Amino acid sequence: MKVINPATETVITEIAEDTNQSILEKFDLLTKGQQAWSKVNIADRIAAIQKFYDLLDENKDELAATLTSEMGKPLQQSYNELNGARGRIKYFIDNAAKYLAEEWVTTEGATKEKIVFEPLGVIANISAWNYPFLVGVNVFIPALISGNAVFYKPSEYATLTGLHIQSLLYKAGVPENCFQMAIGKGSVGEQLLLLPLNGYFFTGSYRTGKYIAEKVAGKMVPCQLELGGKDPLYVADDVDNIQKAAADALEGVVYNSGQSCCAVERIYVQENIYDDFVNAYAEECKKLKIGDPLDKDTDIGPLSRKEQQAFLETQVDDAVILGAQIVCGGKIPDRKGYYFEPTVLVNVNHNMKVMMEESFGPVVGIQKVKDDAEAIALMQDTSYGLTAAVFSKSFERAENIMQQMNTGSVYWNCCDRVSASLPWSGRKHSGLGATLSYQGIRAFVQPKAYHIRG
Image (cartoon, rainbow, N blue to C red; front, side, top):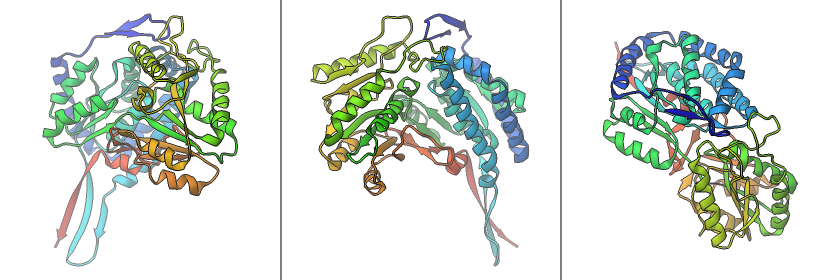
């Protein structure tokens, strides 16, 4: 399997993919290792994760450089991702023991009652390439702390980062028979679906998530899916600062080249301020520098996958054919690498693919609306349900809109944000279950009820 640098299109290295036999051998190793790991005191399991937390910081330069080289995000954003991942790990270190401790429900009377939380067993963590550290630690950290063994399948576009993660976990004290990697493309991930695993945790597209859910349904084990979105942002006419609202919205669209499940993918602006907002947004957009992700001045790095260039080009062409206008961007730059210009489209509507299909790139349509009611109707017009944002001076006005959003997260005067202390969950085609918060800790255990008499 070739690992390609998306900024230069050169081959970084080649890595041998797992075979059916090696997958079975790793699964056997994990099955045996999990039983011993689950008996290790939780304080000792947390101590190993604390060491991993420290090692991420000690090795941050190498980790950030590797992530940028194989995935393409600007180097500072790779450092940001590592810092964010450590913040989430810190939450699990500080809170896991509390939420995994046995709970006495009834302590008086003839029959006492308590709840004990036991690990699921051996779980699959089929992870994503866009934020391999962030989406990875959402799963394998609480899973390991809870006493599970993890069969970790990084995306083929983040394999080198996955190898770093595995190496540092071992160095931190996580046994090799409690964390194993499945290396390869989709066919290797397919092998995990055939194993008698005790849970499946996937981050990626709706299409693949649906396939996984259907494939493993008969196993009757937990299947959590963190999928994509077509996340809306509404700018009401009472915002204090249009320029700031435009800059914040732009960052929500283009950060990580728009390759985020919770990136802003469509913007609605109240007609009274529409022209001013579009002008401010375009002005900010034109300041962005496309370039070498290792250059500290670069704002927009390459897309991770070459095929995404053509996909975005098709979305833009479809919109233009149907009457949209390109305010800036809209093209594949004439240069090496999988780049796409940050793009702003106006005169858009919901007949256009760019307003209905997930883009996963630095592309957005800005649509004029008459009032809050029209904005709500358009924001709700989607099969996804990950996040929705409202920019307004009034919390009461924004709250009324947020309450009507069928999404896992809502934002007031911010967007594209994840917090370790809040559940990260999607609705409809955006997923099943939750990671992060105490719910994301208990996602990796199963309760057992004790009825105690005597």
